Length: 613
Image 1: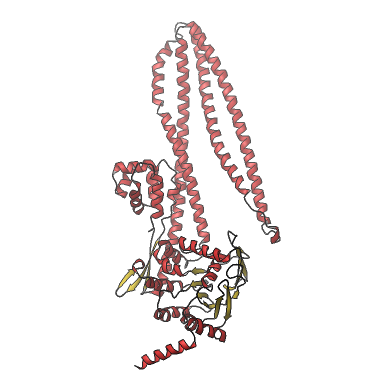
Image 2 (image 1 turned 180 degrees about the horizontal axis):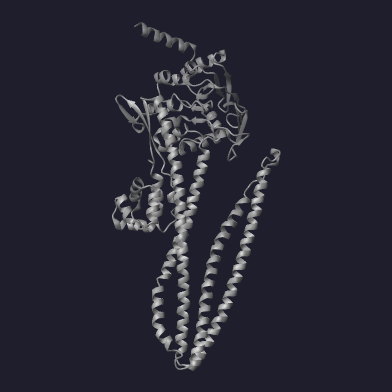
């Protein structure tokens, strides 16, 4: 697929309508005629992101400043047919008649600076990988699953902690019952009537304890139901955000999809109603149990008074026994709940581990693909240029995530976060926190045990899902052979950096490549010896669009089409758009790029004289 036509309405290039062809297309013109503006408007229309956040921001600002309130339309041709893409200055995204693979676009400043930023180098290498949109979606889904499971696990951990705290009272209750048993055994020994009433009271007390436990279970049931209702109601709210199909765009092709959404919305609404009814039923059960408990407690009070009237002091003993047995029944019930929650937490940990395994596998697969792409490029561009990929070498995002967790802990977390991020993976850190393994953190992180314990304590107070899924991205190095040694791209001059980046981006044979003024900061020897050879090695069907001031690129590169732009100071426009051999194009190159026929002739004479000498 290639860009066939670009049309611009309003703004500096108002009325511009130029066509391009497969192969090498060169945009020429004096400075200020709109060469860079044309490229940035193509980028804007096709929604091609910048290679770094800063260059992306500048490109967007440039496009909007020259477009004004206008519109850009780009027509792409090739299999399976023509695709039209349109975007106005007011549009938040492009409008397209079909799917297409976006071109690779480099502004002048990106060629100079992309190699200096880790993200830029990684993005450049990733442009050689197969389409990864689906992989990114799948990875995002796994991350969301991990975060959801982690949040659920955090809720369970807190509940388990509260249950354990409550169960700490069980030994004390058992001891109090044991101490009270002596006094209880004395009851009724002096009165048969008191003994009979004590037996009835025991049965009532057992019923009260049972009802109390059941009522507590209903309370927990309603709490869980409340969380479920909240999440389901939230899901129904998102459905309403789908926009209607614009009446001016013809028949709605999303009718089928909208019908499914409507059905899903109805099912969700029905689910919300069912949950509401379930809560009403549970509330009725709770009220019934409370009434039953009130009746039982009233009967127990009357029995205690009757026993007290028969035997002094018996009422106090029986009341204390009832309260202790009810408390013990509650705690025994909580013990069963604790066991259930612990099993649920173990299942969640297993689920999270499986999801983390899948996430690790996805990221390992991406690293392998990057390593393979680097190896292919090294084989082509080596030994002059070398690319190295280091697994999980970018720690900044992970260090920032650790800092966010430790903020407010009283720890000096800035240096600590960076140090931990370089030594421990997100998964290791989360598993250490889950297991309260501060001694392992001390060993792996190289920090004192008391400090490690404070870190783990702080980690356990937060939802670790976001921390577990932080992307520690791969690190990419670009190196240039300088004499006998390789130099890292950060050590190179601007021209040397360009001599690394240009041959690299010219290896894109399968995608449209657009570059603004590639000759800046490189000499003619590099253009004729490297750049032109790279152009000649490309397949004739692959499209390149260059804007340039250097005549060697269209002439030695045998441009398939040359577009000359001009300007009256207020508006840019196309003066010429034709084949390289067209007399108008020859005239444009000799005049604009060579300084005119006389200047070219005098240079030729100068070179000839020097050759003779």
